[in-house]
Length: 406
Ligand code: AMP
Ligand code: MG
Image 1 (cartoon, rainbow, N blue to C red):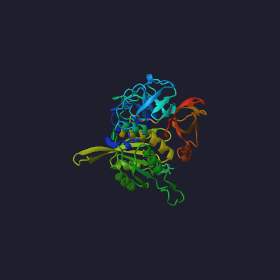
Image 2: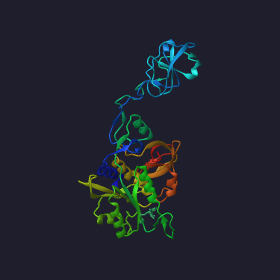
Image 3: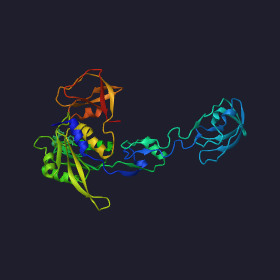
Image 4: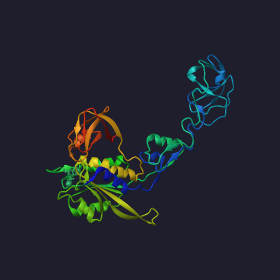
């Protein structure tokens, strides 16, 4: 049995970034930039008005002065108007600043009489003008390789005129649930049977990592069906199998993988829940997109314990970093936030324990039964606290918890 840290390091070490893709900026949400981007335009691109009002020469304009309106500049093509002392140009938000103007008077601050305005307050140079480049200068870094593309990143790329963005690859994934007791939701439940909740859980967790599972299959606990099902899934970048990785006579995943020629790199990790976790791969050969060269690729296999909380924890700690690496992400860690521990907690066991709990207004308290089958408790939790083996934490102590609903 290896440590959690070693398992994670070995996984991330094996996995490589998939070929990058060029995608329209509008559909790049939650993808990761595959290269650095810098500004090719300043923001704003030109001096412009921050208000609907009048462009004026500040030094010829104090409270009570009267100015002659000599033209109008709307947002849009620059009419190259000019403003002199004693003059004003009617202007609107986002419109280019006329030559000679160095301030905008808000329309609320003037009285208009035909082609004349009376200014009702003192004006300073620079009032309500947005200067070229004050937000962003040309050449400034706007996006780093490996950074996640968020809604505002999309807006920034669009503001720079980028129609496309180069992002990391998108893994293809298959999910296989195993177990003679497991039945698809919607079907009739007989005595001794349970509904398959892991397929839905793993599909949703994959979606959160930007991957839509291509195939979701259920398989009985028998070697032949497992072999067939796994074989059909090998053409994906990732195969996630739930259940059947433990040590019972009905846990056949490991031997089925071996029989199909998989390399099993990790089996059993010192983590609670999730000890029977398995990681390995198949080498597969495919042809490149031009149909010419043979490309050697790996299909990574993750065997997660069937208990829902174990599947959840091992997905977040081991599968997520692998998928993020494939997608060219830089930060593989779940977000961590400081929290005050509500009640003392101790881990007397010999494995680190991920305690499920609720993070509310900066306080963390364990929630529900802390057993690996306790799905309801997990559903009420929004944070994980890792308590190291032998560690005791006092009430009111500041701890760092992992969150996943970011
Ligand atoms: P296993 O890892 O196959 O030994 O299963 C451990 C526990 O997880 C057992 O109680 C199973 O019934 C349960 N389990 C296995 N697969 C699923 C699944 N797809 N959905 C919900 N529970 C499951
Ligand atoms: Mg089973």
